[in-house]
Image 1 (cartoon, rainbow, N blue to C red):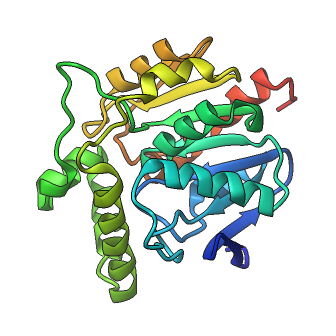
Image 2 (image 1 turned 90 degrees about the horizontal axis):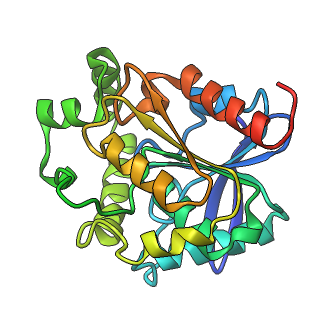
Length: 261
C-alpha cells in the first residue's frame, strides 16, 4: 500500500493515498470500504496516477462539526484539489462517492476532465424506491449489496477487526447524517445538464441497492453520457470484480480522452 499522506483542508486532516503512472484520476469511495488501497486502486494505477482520499467522517479522516450536507463535501473536495495542485483530473465515484462526483462535476464542470459514475447514489427515480440500507442486516444486507456470496463473506469477516469495525460505524454515522432523509438531492437532476465532459454511467447488472435504472437516469440527464452494464456483479462491484471495473473505466477514459491503451 502507498504511504498515507495527510492534507489539511479547512482544518480537516484529510488522509490521502496515491500512486501509479499516467494522467490524474481522483477515486471517490463509497460508504465502505474506505481507508485502504484496494485491488481496484492497484489496477487503475497501472494506467493512471490514482488519488484516493478518505471523505471527512470516513476511514481515517475525522468528521468536522460543520459537515451536515453534500454541499459541504463538494466544497471540501474543491479545496482539496487546490491544496494538492490537482487540475482537471478524471473523477471516478462509487456509490456515495458517485453522488459526490456528480455534484462536484455539476458545480465545477471546468475542474473535471471526465466522469465515471459507478453505481452512484444521489437521484430519485419514481416507482423505483431504494431499500433502507440502515434497516438491513445479516443475510438480507449481504444479498442487497453483493452478488458473489464468497466476496460478501470475506468482506463481513474483515469487519470483525475492532479497529476496522469502529471505522465502519463512524462512516455509517456520517452516511446517515448526509444521506438518510432524504437519500437523494432533489435539485441534482436539474443541475446535471451543466456537466460538459465525457461521462460514463457504469452499473452492475445485479445491483439490488441502487438498480441499473438509476444509471439510465444519470445517462439521460447528462449531455452525451453513455451507460454500460457490468455483468455478473452486485453493488459492491469494486470488491467483486475489480479487474473488470478497472478495465471498463480505463477503456472509456482512453477512448474519450484520446489516449492509447
